[in-house]
Image (cartoon, rainbow, N blue to C red; front, side, top):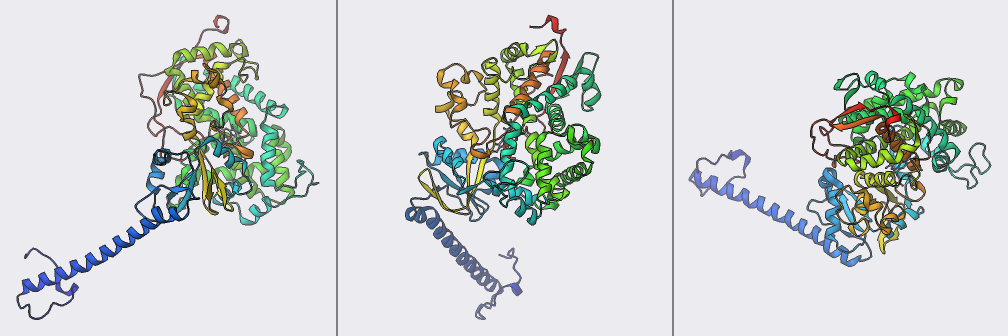
Length: 549
Ligand code: HEM
């Protein structure tokens, strides 16, 4: 008993009849334990009442609302699991509620409704009145420094007869921008300009001499072979490609490190999405601010020195923004978001595609053979051939299957007023998400061996050939905000891989394990590779084009 170490000052006084000091201490300790027990019982009771209310009584009283996945700690909810592996959590929740109804999840006081049924997801994409995508864009704008007055101006309706891009519905510039992206990026003359620019860049840069000069990260070089870390290399090449296609050389001249800064930023972009306090994310803020300053400097270069090199959308956005008096700083932030949309996903898709192809040499050879007619010697000449699924069905299947495996995004919308989706009432102020991955891993739709990369699932059966138009196929989101860059993205990735395979042999150095996706970090499309899982590939010159298939 003497080992009990309570100081008598910190405890209430014991009755004086306990003359023995040991008994006196024992009394005090018992009394303290009793008060602790009362508090614990009280907390336990409150917790039981809260839990019974939240997960039993409330659902009974509101059967029209989505059921919620139970959790233990109020406010925290499934926060930790959500941050560690949101798709793992969603898969677990889907199994918990065996019917296909929407369900609810709470993470750090935010409630999300998850819609995992393909038909119900179409309801989400269609309902632009009660479900807002703009709120997500505006939050990003705020996080990255757009001021409130500018956001308000950009989201205020404009006259139907304004000059510049036609606006017959009197939309705000924020909404009209979606139409402008479509005008730039859907197949047609405007997209062809970008395709030709990309073809010329790929033809010039995908050269052995260029690798040797540009890739400071190469592990070894000889006169006809070079070893490169695949993720680092595809990231570097694709971001420079996207930048060139949209800004020509001008941005690179203003800041030769722009593409490198972007990749550093893009790898920690989840800190921006989770709105980390600035003192915890210097690694994201420093490159971001540098890029925004460079974009501001870009818009201060005299028009004659930059506009003829820029894509139509960059010049058109500048004109539209200036017409509503948006200043250079705010313009730079808006265009920064566009730079991000152009560059975040293609670099990762090419990494995953090459990774799967090297592990499936038959498909690699099929890709090479099918795309051969697009070349004259080693030069890519025909920009439409590789895109055409009737001429390159295997390439098309490889593209789809790579996106199916690597697409990790969810479409997220804010509920702006109560709405019924999938027969369930969703409350204003919460968010609705359509997790693409859950749709893409539905065996009933995409067939067996769902965890394996099998392009043949898109080719071998009539049902497989219809998959690209299935409502379960959502790598690019859906509705009015469906990724307008999807055609150009396919072109960038397949033209790059085709030219690489035309000119070089590529193989893994050693036998690296299959790189793991970084499931803990949210992305807006394609999953990143886990830190430390990048691996070396050896790229070797092939024989001259005349000897090729
Ligand atoms: C494999 C590559 C790509 C994937 C997986 C992808 C995926 C997505 C997704 C999931 C969205 C959000 C849609 C929504 O929630 O409704 C989106 C939006 C967008 N993407 Fe992509 N994207 C890719 C490549 C590109 C490229 C190369 C560009 C431009 C050249 C681009 C431009 C855009 C734009 C402008 C939006 C916003 C749509 C709008 O507000 O109108 N994307 N993308």
